[in-house]
Image 1 (cartoon, rainbow, N blue to C red):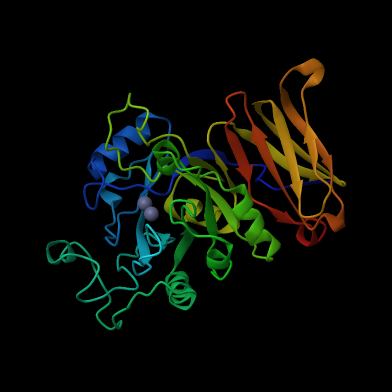
Image 2 (cartoon, helix red, strand yellow):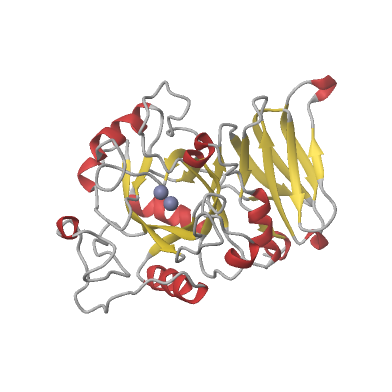
Amino acid sequence: MKKFLLPENGNFYKANLHAHSTISDGRLTPAQLKEAYKSHGYSVLSITDHDRMVPHHDLTDPDFLMLTGFEMEFNEARRPWRTDPKTCHICMVALDPSIDRQPCWHRTKYVDEADRALIKFDPDEPDFEREYTPECINAAIKICRDKGFFVTYNHPVWSLERYPDYSRYEGMHAMEICNYSSVVSGWDEYNPAVYEDFLHQGKRIFVQGTDDNHNRQQPDHPKWDSFGGFIWIKAPRLDYPSIANALVKGDFYASQGPEIYALYMEDNVLHVECSPAVRIYCIARARRCQAAYGENGGLATHGAFEIRPEDGYVRISVQDEKGRRADTNAWFTDTLFGD
Ligand SMILES: [Zn+2]
Ligand SMILES: [Zn+2]
């Protein structure tokens, strides 16, 4: 019997859940972003302006869905022995379209007075004072989760965060395995090792590819930061509840280009069908990794990997001829072999 790790039925919808507009430090307006992404084959966009959560349901149409979101940051105090402070950035995406109040707000800080009028807050909520500590960051993650947000940990490389920092973060749904704006800026922001660190801690989180676009360059410039990191969400239809449900269930994979068409277990074998690949990795927790190649030196479009319970967890990574990757979420073998 087949066990589908990406749903058997439904459609794939291309999504970018980390973007900046003129509401914070991006160059394009929300309407311009919607048009740019829609014309490039995307179906879902979340504009996650810094500390400014503004719903954009007016831009949703039958073929394009806007998810409400914002990005929050926790900055370390500047210290003389370091050229730059560390920071922790997290993105929140509302899982219900009726959510219009920004959690973890502060009456006087983090947003200038003019922009404060853009944002709705819960007046009964106390001021949330930010500190660059795991306790404070975890408190924010918990508040946002409890209020119905999907929480993603962003760009650890750009943030200068290392294992002692991010290993103490708890409760996020996902992390960015690729942040394209950082990549085009020159940061090596493809983070499979960070994902492995979280998984080795037993944290069952998902991976996202995002643009984190600010669009400060023109589209033909090498530092144009749109359309390089995304997720493909598989859902029965394109509406807010279906897409939100697919996010929570992990019915998506991250990519910089390659596509994964199907992923399922049959008996003890994990099958992947994908766009032409130089190599298909099957990465496990245990020291038993596997790779699939095409025949006679050609490209592979199918991989079949025997999985054992002692593998701990497994995930698939597909590499194309340009070196770009598509990465699935990890599946822990207790659930793969469970009911
Ligand atoms: Zn950020
Ligand atoms: Zn950002």
